[in-house]
Length: 131
Image: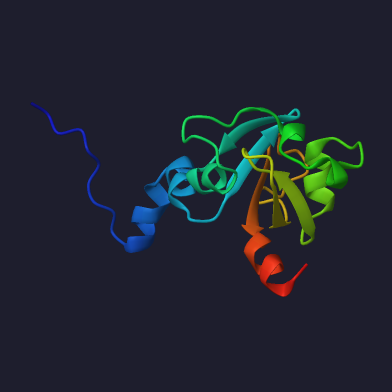
């Protein structure tokens, strides 16, 4: 039987360069979501857990993620892009609101077809501060 594996990389950076991006995104403890044409096309485990969704779910309209007070009748991708660095309310599966700080888009070219962002859950911090 022939071994089809590639030879080991010559450096640790070479090892990282070979890893598929989705494997890395799946393993990150930072909640990450990707939106395309108004639909959630990817959410990592951390994002799903933050919103109380089963590990094998979370798809559909991105607008369903954003709390109505935040959306201001704009498409979800626009809200998330324009709110980078600011507080956004996301809808938890139990009906509560999860307050997050939205990252700048992780894909930065103007022609990237997918909005890929990370979020930081600050709900607990806000509760502790009485906000």
